[in-house]
Length: 329
Image 1: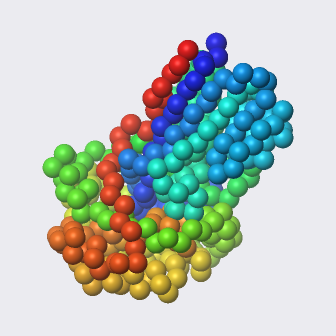
Image 2: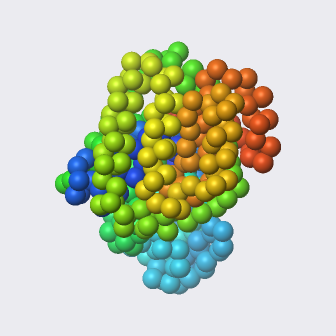
């Protein structure tokens, strides 16, 4: 039975280590990929509503009103409706806490996971976290053939702090990183999320990075080792080790594609390290978006003041993953 209105709420994410090893060009050919990521309390909301007539209205940065699904220009909306066999009489609206493109927080996949969740609920169907992630991967990577990895879809669906392993047979192992409460609080208070104001197309960076995987296999394997080591340390509550892991991972990741960093980003990173950070990175594919720094023993206000050209974005961890927060009959 179709519901009248559904609202889903799906978290964005920050990646700590291993980003890029979830690219199929790596894990299918050179060994398992491994990523540690954390969902944060910045969300994309999807409203799905039954429309009075049989037309389809989709509202994001633009508004589309069409008669048929195949006329929808937004590719993931079009393919999600096709996948779930929804053909009309529906209105879809998206709202985001943070700019929805080019930030490095996984917004494209978060949008899709939230949309799929809302559409399933609209159709009166229960869907598991794994099914949501797998459907999103199917649409983005198989149907639309967009370049990129698989961590974002799983993080949006599951939430929390997760250790993800990407196997050559396409299976994904999802393992929560269980950190003692006091250590988890210290970890959170030691992190700084800073917006550069630069938006970039992750697809372009992923395309360049994917084409060079075979040239950088040793770097990818070392990133996997760093991630596996970090998982063990965090599980023991050794959260102050994060900075070192971030730093080692970032030094490797910068070498994977020329577009991942820039002279300005490098200067900001060095400034952070000179002012007490133990490590950091650009979130996501690179090129712009958000910088993440781990600086456990600094005065917060003083550290932020060293970056007048950046905007700090306060956050907390999210442990719920994608949720349905409203169901109207």
